Image (spheres, rainbow, N blue to C red):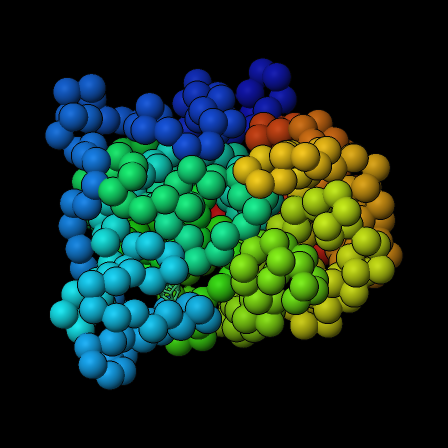
Length: 389
Ligand code: SF4
């Protein structure tokens, strides 16, 4: 049920306008413990600690030789000697066994609008209880959250928040989903997996924003409890992935295909970086691949880059570049093409691909008119992909 407000904005009836505005405002701030919604001041000191709090045996590793282990979680397949850690900095070989060092210890906890993930086809105007630990399996030079993605657990303040507390807090805050986000959630897999199982039992959706750099076995297992994934398709050449992310493109494409096979709702984000991945022939190639392998109904978000971390010398993406990419994607046959990080741009709205009428109106993270009926266009009846109820 949704309620139309005086200003025409429509909110889910379980979330008051005041609550929605509160988390919309907070959503612009990426990471801070100051936004520990729902935690009384007196308890913050007890739950926020610097350094390691808990460990948990990793679910995916194998023993190799002389106490070395091989991590099987992501395509980096780190070989780790005793006492050392993998590339993501949050997994450690202790006497031939591999441990997650961030289980139940997020460093970021926020109630965000689901539109911020971004998901434009999942329960519009609802809150998503969002968590992240430190660490990442990529080292993107343009990372927006590098303060936590490129840190070790000892370098930040962490929160003692076991899976059952995540779900409890999410329910208290009237969130409709739990989002595993801000860094690559694969690196806190055990925490995500345990939380996601409890969340599903409690009637919450599980959604993630991921770089897609995960091995097929843990991914297929995760798909049992994952409802939606927004995958960063950061570029469409191996050179881009190797030079700017210390990653690989091919495993990301494989992840996208598996998510499709496992019937997880998928949206794609492409951060357009001036001179790095903004060549329109490559954009066209990427869009044609998405159409062929995932389907034309796959939503894609072309997102505006702002200079950060190691790419501060570049300018923000010109809006005209994003508009050109959107035109290329539409002419390639993709049906839901959005422009991100440009509040109030018409490219934020969802249009029906058949009758071209406005279905969901957005201004930043605020939702205006919605013209969907039971997941179909309210004008011509075309089914619109997504999770709508
Ligand atoms: S999850 Fe971490 S430790 Fe495991 S392979 Fe990936 S980067 Fe290496």
